[in-house]
Structures are given as structure tokens and as C-alpha cells.
Image 1 (cartoon, rainbow, N blue to C red):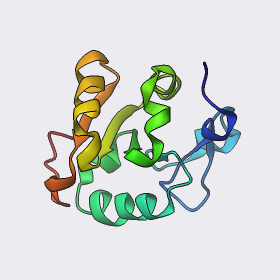
Image 2 (image 1 turned 30 degrees about the vertical axis):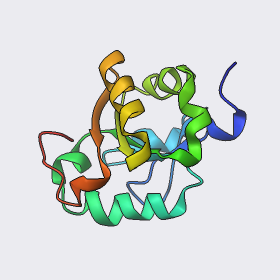
Image 3 (image 1 turned 180 degrees about the vertical axis):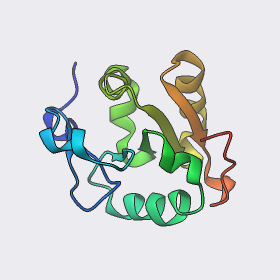
Length: 135
């Protein structure tokens, strides 16, 4: 089936430059001193803000490594039925962290068990104090 082109955009959120990582890597990304972290899909503005202000400001381990935080919610259920999204995100060689809502926990656990590219799953009842070893 393939991944829709509107979901193929992936930009770094570690600084104000927002360098593009996928589909084509921005040349200025190689000169960035910050470690890279991304949110996907990018159209989830509240999710993006919640990850930056809630998880990343309290978890220094996640800021030191390259991670893609995935909005694993019912809103994007159709994306997660096929394996294409994992293959696409895994091609960046960054860790994939699923931030799951209550309704998607079973599917998140399935993908975590069946694909080693997924580093961790953060559940809705974990709160903002996510353990450093998990992320």
C-alpha cells in the first residue's frame, strides 16, 4: 500500500531551525550541535508541544539520543495497520518511541514485540515522569 506522501515529512525539533530529516536530509543538519529528536506525524501540534514540554524537559536521556516520538493514537489508526510506517521511520536509524493512548495500547504492544526498531512505549497513565531507562 505504501505511506502517503503527507506523512513522509520528518523534521528535527531539537532547535529553532527545524532541519528536514526525511525525505531528503537538510545539509545544515550535519552542522547542528544539538542531538536530534522528532515528532511524527507532524500535524499533531498539541502532541508535539506535550512531548517537548512534558517529557523532554524532564528526561535528559531522551534529549541526548536521537528519538522519534510517534503519536500512536486512534486518530492515526489507519497508518498503523501496515508495517510501512515502521520501515520508513526506522530508515533514519533513530529510536522510535510510541506514545500510546488508552485505546491503542494493545496495538502498540504488538508492534513493540514484533519490531526491534521500536525502543519503547509510553502509555497514557505513565504521566510525565517517564523513567530514563525506558526512553
